[in-house]
Amino acid sequence: MSEKKRVLSCIQPSGMLTLGNYLGALKNWLKMQEEFDCTYAVADLHAITVRQDPQKFRGQIYSTYALLLALGLDPQKSTLFIQSHLPEHTALTWLLASCTQFGELSRMTQFKAKSAVHTDNINVGLFAYPVLMASDILLYQPDFVPVGADQKQHLEIARDIAMRFNRVYGDVFKVPEPYIPTVAARVMSLQDPTKKMSKSDENVNSFVAILDDRDTVIRKFKRAVTDSEASVRFSEDKPGVSNLITIYSAVTGKTVAEVEREFEGRGYGDFKLAVGEAVADELAPIKERYEKIIADKAELERIFRDGDARAESVARKTYFKAMKKMGFVL
Ligand code: AQP
Image 1: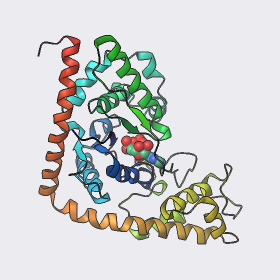
Image 2 (image 1 turned 45 degrees about the vertical axis):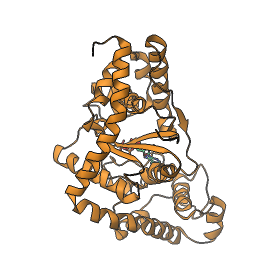
Image 3 (image 1 turned 135 degrees about the vertical axis):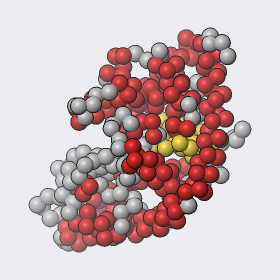
Image 4 (image 1 turned 180 degrees about the vertical axis):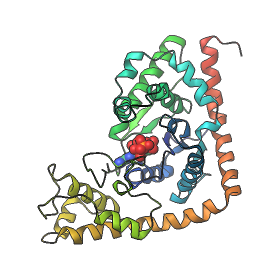
């Protein structure tokens, strides 16, 4: 086994991956690949807690996996797999569900938020989502799980479930630590900067997709909601402008103070164009690589089958250990 510490992270194929996913998570996945033994999954089972159109969904799974490769994740260095291809994820979820309390799931803010939006489909999957996430994590015995602020609660519950299981049945799961990325940015919606940028947002102008073409990226930034002060300054009461500063700073590597100085005395028009161009420049080579990768489905499938097999060799061991400790006859 490798000496490196293990890292586990997943992304849902619930739409076109956004600049938020990129700056908040994926850019960091790439960095971590050099330092850690990384396992990354396309978490398709999570995506169905919100209704998906089957045909579109299939395309999104392929496209999300291809995008991970286009970003530069190396299937030789990291294990890249598709969650639903491994039955251990759902099977362990059932074992862990019996170690999870109804009360603790009811307190999850994501459940509260998503059930408020999808009032016609408050399904059991949406409620039990954190148990599946605990299973995704614990199967791979990771040392670290990278977490953004919005995911902290889910890692905490995974840790609680692991500790509870270990206490009742004996040691099976490593209790992972959160890994707070040094470069992650929290990106907000371009149309409502008090909300995070989300790939499933119905308003396509609210997010920039990693695969948007140059003109679309620039147009979306031109339309971004700002304020009437006409001053490029980072401040809590200027969420739109602050969000654009965060994005520009994450893409160019400039500090907030440097960005403010650069645009002192200049209008929002100039600023928005500069942000749009910087983002478009960053995304263009990814899109170019993506187009090549997605064009060769057979090769793509070969790569993910290989990743699935590598993931399964780890997941199986953990799953059967948990079964055995619980007293199942194997
Ligand atoms: N706006 C964001 N800013 C920073 N980080 C973000 N992430 C998502 N949106 C932002 C991070 O991306 C990773 C993968 O997220 P996910 O696909 O598993 O689910 P999510 O957080 O629910 O992402 P979305 O885009 O908002 O999806 P939908 O719309 O389907 O709910 C996570 O590490 C997340 O923090």
